[in-house]
Length: 71
Image 1 (cartoon, rainbow, N blue to C red):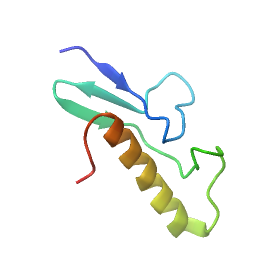
Image 2: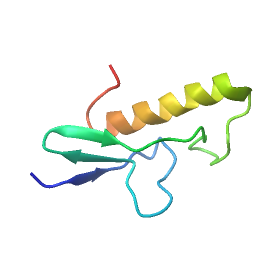
Image 3: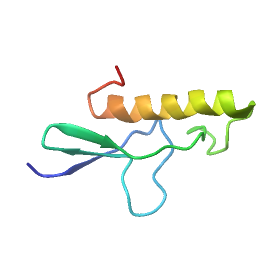
């Protein structure tokens, strides 16, 4: 089973030489996320709670691009 990179336009683009996620042997390995708004590339305002929610929205977008969810 080959490793396949996963990309979602609904999450911030990977900066550097890594992927948002990798599919391998039936599993999805998600990279860490930052609380950036993918539409603007800016840190979301509103403090830590808003930023945590954004991180999980980003992770959900990448999981969905892999055909999965965070459930």
